[in-house]
Length: 336
Image (cartoon, rainbow, N blue to C red; front, side, top):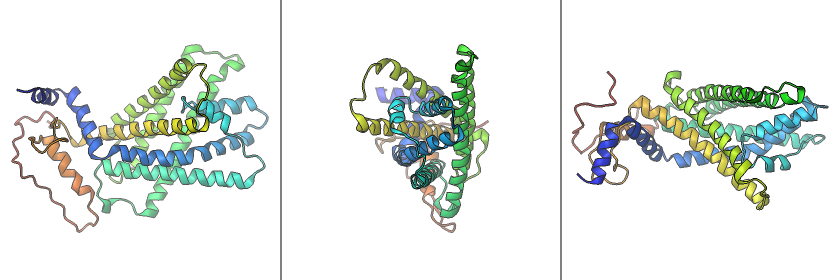
């Protein structure tokens, strides 16, 4: 037995090796990088208008309390630890400029709905929802607006709570590490609930909380880890460094950070689909050659892809394989 055959046999027999491989293969099959890139584009378009709007609203809502304004803004910018300081120095309030405020609102709504639309497209692609079963353009945008309001409200809530927690010391209520741990756990829980909501609402098919729970929890934990690692990186690896590349570096850093978050979301959604539809184990060499024996997971995955492109309800799509089905008698992914 060659090295490839030995590795293939090993990953098929061990869930901890075969399942992640199947997730990566499903991500590649769905062109996950392109799905994440589309989310990144709209996320980038909406971010600056959204921050302008946030700063302006804070200026009106917390007028006379500049300290709390700054803490809320700093908490929001911690979502982008690598370039948060540069963002803060480039975002200013729009007081006295009604036109600019209107443009900021419209830009935020456009970009936010675009992110949700891209999310709908990604979730429907990942879950294999036929095109004819997806919402029409008007309904799709209404769904996107609903998701934007709910998820945006949740993010704003965690931002304010984080700001109040970090600012407790200024009022003599220093809770130390316990407060930070509690805030982090609360943020992960809220984010997991938001991911569960988004995964379900953005997908144009009936899926349960149980079916998306694992991926949502993984996405919430991973996002929190990314923020922690980014904060550590800024505080140590980049300590004392100047913004050498100015606005160019800010833009690249921001795009990279949003893209990393988008990839995380898409991958975690793939986790749900691979688990629910039992798209594993996959053959190790199946993405690279036709000279391979398909597994049951391969057949289920490849059989689902053409159905996704079904445009009409009266259109029939059938999938057949010339290769004989010689799958194992015992399917380790089969439900009892």
